[in-house]
Length: 370
Image (tube, helix red, strand yellow):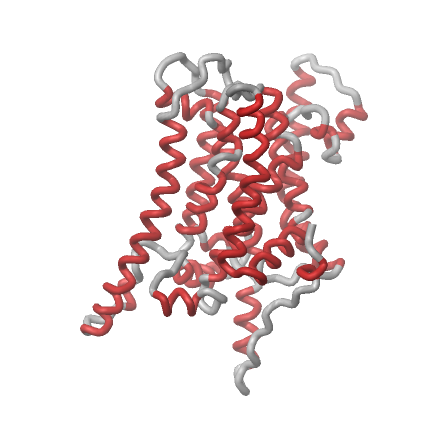
């Protein structure tokens, strides 16, 4: 997975701190090693909307007619894709500056990354088993044990149906210490261009099979093929790593990052907030001139983030539905949306993550990950 020349690639060495600033440098290093995902408030809001979308998709009535609302109900696979990409983005945002090497460090990472998720999964599965038992279901103990240890979803659904998402993301979380090396290799060899090239390759890996099936089968992808491209655990790995690469691009533009100086010098920062920090702008003509120079790029990037969201909304609400699609079934060309919008979703996360605001909120939040 990772070329040998990249696996041993050393991390960038920090310049030694001036005398008397050792404590301050250590504190800054510790803060950098614990980038809090709580600093990305827009991600919290977006995940809340995506979760509400998924709930509505399962409980809202489905009626024939224009795709305006039916599209939102049926195309919940786009919300799932957002959660996958956002999981990769948030994981790397929180751990991208940490050295995940050594047995105990890796154990700590897995406990923090997986502990609450796995515990919640076990509680939800136990609740589902109790409810379904009350309704007359009978269980094979070995089947429940395989579900408990995350083995059954590879071949069959478990009692708590929505738990498939945990199964699907588990390989991505477990392999993150390796896939981040792949991202670091692309970044080390090509910088921003290397990361963009990696994102394009990852999108081809996740989206390419659906395009091939669509072409070979004369415009029809079956529901079973959609399930294989979504529910089978390794199927979400490429989108997860795409989110990791997007986070690596965002981290490069944090103050002090590899691309921060280039962006400031060229006045074309890739990741910036549409709203400038007016509190730091003086009334002097020099500051007004600098503000006007940077307003264009910041507005452009804010507009690009809005454009990414617009692409998603147009796809959800305006694209027509295939005539043969059944309730909550995704066949025809609908499975193209399983992974097709991953670049737009990653672009939204990248372009909406302002480096200066993120750093300020990170310092205020103090630590932790979402």
